[in-house]
Length: 308
Image (tube, rainbow, N blue to C red; front, top):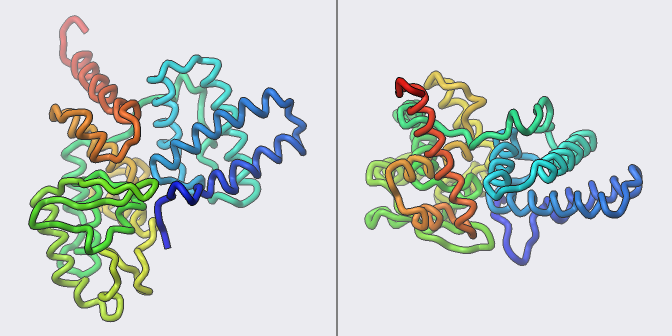
């Protein structure tokens, strides 16, 4: 069963992936103690970021690395620190891939950090609308997919939070959800009326006709009554993107989360409110979305102003 990490249950990254790689560096590579400690600091910081985003090492994509380095840059990390962290991450993911611990190496093909360390990817509001309109809501699975996509964008939830949403966490008539995030911390997230109606339609229709799985406490149960897997959500998104004429490689649950936050900030939402809705422990993590908006303003200026 997928579930977010808790304070009493360290993530798999800290329990398995990081110690395994550090042992490899110390024993097989003979890395000096000072270098080993520097790698440990960089990768521990990255591991905390994975926990913040609800990701495992196997789920990390290039866009997740880009986002983390964007955060480091916004925190005024030095070029030397960025270069060292890049080396640490390349070594980690190459090792995990060689050990068959992850399905692909997300650092493969990465260029110099100065060239690829950009702000998070996101979808335009028009692309989001096309994506949300893609599922065939006349079919039971299509209606489920529609409800999933609506919640991803309307609430900005992490994929692990979406898959483990309980029926008792929904307060649709009042317009909000109670989401259990990292460390089992609960937060209240508003949900748009239009999205709530699609979720309610899924609950009253196909979900109520699932047979034994209908008794499951999860909003989106799989065939065995357990929560639907994260992989299923990824596949739903990719299929919707293809149908909407959007490059599937540019779409992921995290891209939907980035789009949710950026569109709120673009609409002058209070940054503290966005922080609470995203479940960020630190406002510094949320502030990346102000940089995204400023970058967009700059692009508009450069494209439109005669003196640009």
